[in-house]
Length: 419
Image 1 (tube, one colour):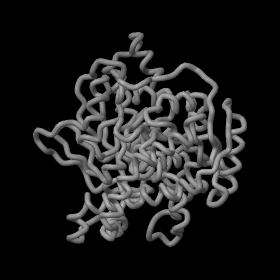
Image 2: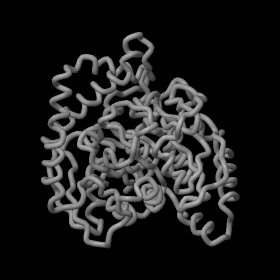
Image 3: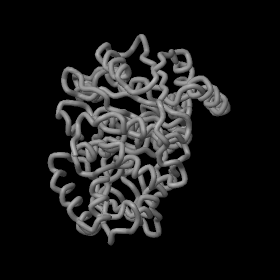
C-alpha cells in the first residue's frame, strides 16, 4: 500500500485509476476467496494520505445509509444512517471502501464458523483454520483483495484471524478508536483493530484512525519481557518463539505471568459473559440467538451482577499494577498468540466429526485478558511450523504505545509476503 501511495503522490497513477484497479483485483479473487458480504458504491476518491486506496472491512460497521449484516446476512438500507466513526476517519484521510466482509455471527466466535455464508478458506493453506471473528478481514488481506482491513477485537477477534493467516494484527488500546457505529458485543472489551500484510501499511491506517497519537518513535534499543508458559503451549511453538526472541535485536528478560494471567482471565471472562448476555438479552430470551451467542450468553445470564461489578471496579487498579510490573523497565511483553500450531479447520468446527475442544481452546487461550486490561497488542508472524503454517507471537505494550509495537513489527521481515 505504501508503494502505491508513492506512485499516486508522484502522479504516476491517478487516485481514481488506482481505486478502479484495486476493486477489479478484489472482484477477480472473490470466487476463490468467498469472504465478501456486499460490494459497496464508491464515490470519487477523497483527498488526504490514503487517497486512491480502496479497502474492505468487517461487516460490523455502519456505512452511509446501511446497517451491517453482522455475520448473519447482507446489510440493510436505513435512511439517514451515519458512517461509523472509524470508517469516517479513514474516509477523511482519503480512503474508499469497496466491500463489507464476512465475520462470525455477531462477532461471537474464535473461528470463521458461520452457517449463513460459505466457509472462509485460508489463502495460505486450504486445510488450515481461519480464526474469528474478523475472519473475512483476514482472508481478504491475505488473498490480496485489500491492502488492509478493519476488524474488531473483544477477546482476540483481530489477533486470532491474523495469527491463522500470517498477518499483522493490531488490537488497539481500548477507547483509542471510537466504536461509534460499530455493533457491540461486550462494550467494555470491544476494540477496533487493523489487519495487514505489512507493518508499514498498518501504520498508515493507524495514523488515519488516530492522527493525534504518535506515529513513530526515535530508534532505541528495545527492551522486552518474554513469557512462554511452562504448560499449555505446544513444544514446537515454544521453541520457535524462544529461537526468534534470541535473535531479536533487543534486550530480552524471561518472566512469569502465570498467576496474574489466571486472575485477569477470570475477570475477563466475567465481563465477556455478562455483557454478551446484556447485549443479546432479547434473542437469548426468545430463543432466537445464534448458537455462538447462545453458548456465551446463556452462561452470562448466570453470572451474578455483583461479580461483574467487582470485576469492573478492579479493572483500573489491575491495569496500573500490570503496567508497573511489566513496563517500568521494558517496552514490550512477548507471549504466544496461539497456544498450539494453526489447526485444520475441521478440528475447530463445532459439530464436525473431527472437532476437538482442546484445539478450539488453544486458539483463544491467551487473548481475553488483554481486552480486560485494555492495553494494545500486536500479532506478529515470526516462523513457519513443520506444515509451513504461521507461528506468531503476541506483543503487549503500555496503553497508547501502538507506534512502538509497529516499530518492532518493522524490524521483522514478512514471512509470507513479498513486495
